[in-house]
Image (cartoon, rainbow, N blue to C red; front, side, top):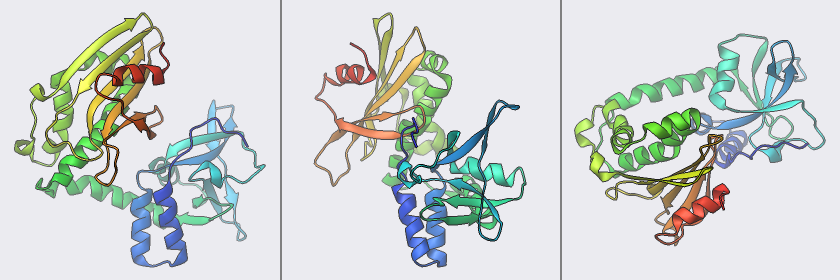
Length: 297
């Protein structure tokens, strides 16, 4: 089976699945629920010509119960199995499909041809409660640790900014300024009532935009050097083709404290996947390397 999609790294989810299947106790169930919350899955789908879209396949077990099959990675697909189409969607969307539009489908079958872990409707409801509690929890959270600053920066640099970039493209690029960036970093602090703990001002950000050719422009964003922890970024790069609105997003990410590599050059793709590509080049050479990776001459 040939699928022209980037694979998904669900290693942590697959480890949690295996641990739960080895011994189904409450603690392992809780770890599984949290491990699957933010993941994406491959869901086989068939074309619905009348609606101009795709509808997930359904499989039955020996008892005749119906489940929606989903796979955690390409290696979990059965050989020689053919599907009309394949959706790469968030687990949360799978939950919504089954809970918000009631059918005879009783849950999700994770990797049905190998692990065959059944997530029944009770499990889906539990996932939704966990998601809701996560949204409510920050209201009582107090910003006291460096861990919070690290997590906030990571989420902004690897989720919030690229998500807006790929969703809005040129509209987002045109709106970017030091003030706007500072606001994006500050917003999580405001959400938890810790605005006074926010450590930056817009003067801590620096943006430089270059028009290289008619079909190639690039923006360099220098992020604050204060409170730069592992997995946080000291530089961000947005590169685009003004003629086609095709965009790319790259980052110079600080390595883990246990690594010898001080900084990685990473990419976030339009489907939300993140990858560390290589050790970041020396100062002054990053922009040229980003252009090479993007495809510019």
